[in-house]
Length: 307
Image (cartoon, rainbow, N blue to C red):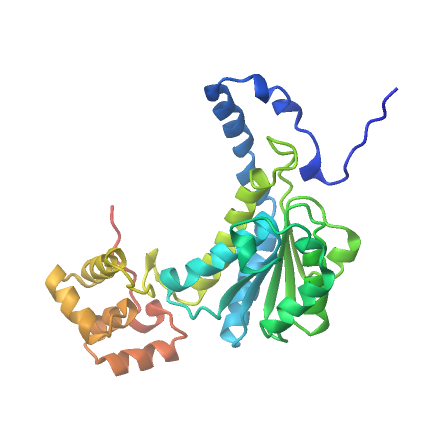
């Protein structure tokens, strides 16, 4: 008689709805995966208040000169690095402001580094090498909730006085939760392919990280309405977007918006304030600094609404 071994981690259990997926035709596979993916936003929604807490913590951290660090291994680590790397082009942030740390370092971004997530001492070394300090915000990412590298990283962060959070899709053990100020645990259930947390757990994690950084950047005034006004025009697409935003908000032609951006050293935010208040770039920068970087506080008007 065989005994059944059940893993306590939800992400490692077998999904009863997909046990025959290897018999399905391509369309059947798509339908099964879509049905499972539809459950992800609901799981994330159960953590809405804690995600909001993380947004507030990130905003406070940034306003006080601190930085946000994502720490993870495997897929979780890659998602953290991805979210961090998207902040500079989207919001015009310094690359130091949001950073991703992955077990195994840069090689782990493109190939599995076996055993890296179990190297406990390396977790401390990696955070120390980045200069993680009191006043920073460290978010551990562990789909299963049990990644040793993440647990030790959070312990180290807590010891030095950094604020901490965890993003997980299975309940972390008590020793990990004891190191966490903000627990974000979105239970996504068993995966389509057992243990493959790049699927539902990965999708949930991506949604949560998107909310944390985007929410914090919105609070910092990196958007005007839903327009990204602190983007860096590092390529033709972003330069075109910059011109379109200025033209729309300020009611200018494309040529006029391009000329205004030149006077604003390419800054969409400065250009909007310059046009609205008829001031120089230096004066616009001064007004924005006094208003905490929020355009609405400077010009006291919303952006135009497209109906």
